[in-house]
Length: 430
Image 1: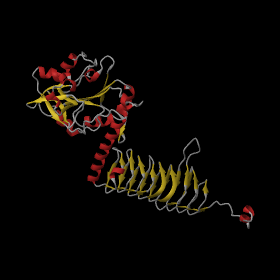
Image 2: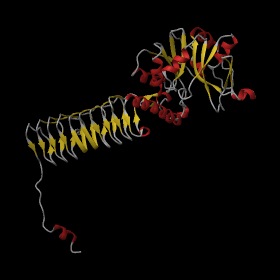
Image 3: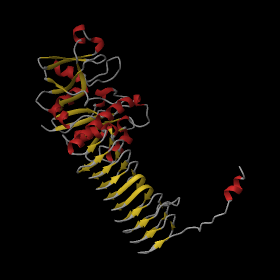
Image 4: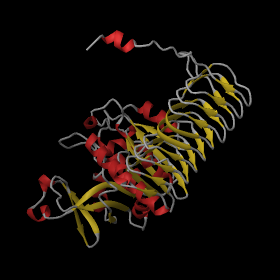
């Protein structure tokens, strides 16, 4: 049976205490809504997102990364609540799965389980050791009978541990008939999606409970929830990568963006951050180093190295306190305390301590090109735009502000001058 997916993302998310829409807060490098979209698109070609609060901002963010997404702009003032969010929503396929945009930990497997079978409605449920505060789901003979709010539970019902996880797979024809019948005759004056369960039971329809893992259906409503979800997502990412062959020293100290990719036996030491769409091949990233939106192949970085966006390192050694930004390095050694920005450096070249590519004049960025087998001495400044050809030596302390031809030595130093007994004259007799 073909599946349509509706993702509810219309809420204001006031508990997040942020100007950023709740569903755009990031988890492991990607807005939480995007995690839900990724899971939805693995099972469906008909995905609709329901928006209201900061709708245009969310729509633009989604459209910048995804195609083939439908949007439904809902008036949450006129139709508040989860049921109100579904008013006027139409889907293409025979079965509709209703998700929440603040559930970033959901997986394809759980969504497929929710859509399986031939029940009129599959309803996600969780068994909690302590269900206090939640409405109870009453189940009899394997069928959902009703959802009872805690304040309305009998003593017997209070002992139940099964609660509603908030995700439903519903036959679309039923959904389109039930949603217009929802009313807001309740204390909160909201339209509740849970009311469709009562409608289905009253008609003798089959409402099947699908038991799901609490971790996957955890909603994110606060910064604390966001942090907990991040911890879970990081554990998943690192578990998968270690099973793939990545070595991690103290993995709980490491942060890895969900968009990063790895090949071969990479090594990540403690305190490492791999950010953005970085790609590592047989790389060794040492303690407390950062790689962001860069490619690192057969190279080592750190400790305390920083590889900024747009860099490509191949067969290169980057040592401690070296920063590389938007540069291409092949077969290069930069052992310590250097800044390499907007540069291209070829194989066999060595960048000494304290070397800086002066790539910015306050208005514009300029490129430094360094050829093969170039030795750049310590504390040199390379003032871009500048080209240093192959087989060049740059003496320590040199400021290079013009091109250097192949095989040359570039040196610029002020002659040293000494003043005899100056120390004693300056401080006097003591």
